[in-house]
Amino acid sequence: MSAAVSNVTEDSFATEVLGADRPVLVDFWAEWCGPCRMVSPIVEELASELGDRIKVLKLNVDENPQIASTYGIMSIPTLAVFEEGRLKDRIIGYRPKNQLRQELERNLA
Image (cartoon, rainbow, N blue to C red; front, side, top):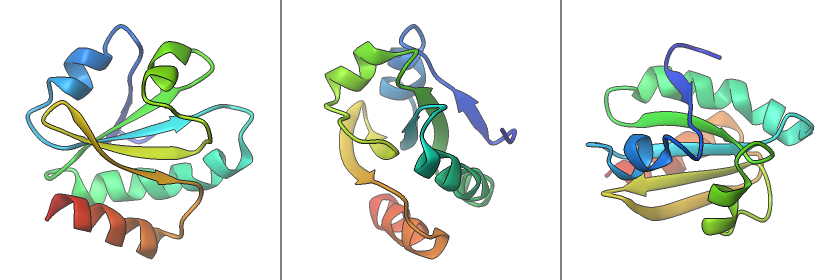
């Protein structure tokens, strides 16, 4: 994992995500998920490129099922954008980098 991406857990979610002072992208993933492994390096690249505009966190759904349930995460990978403590958008499934960046830029506009 790159320095631009950190892990978040049920214990730190409220502070790290809901209390953040800028938009947050949460990558809901699991170790066994092939598409999650495919999107992970793309998320890390975008975190480095957009790091001054968005905070990027990863949440393992197997280790933190309550948060996944609270936000209705039924499929992974799900990339959820939070702003001002609220879920603003979700991107479900693998996307190529250029498409994912476009979707994130739309949420940061």
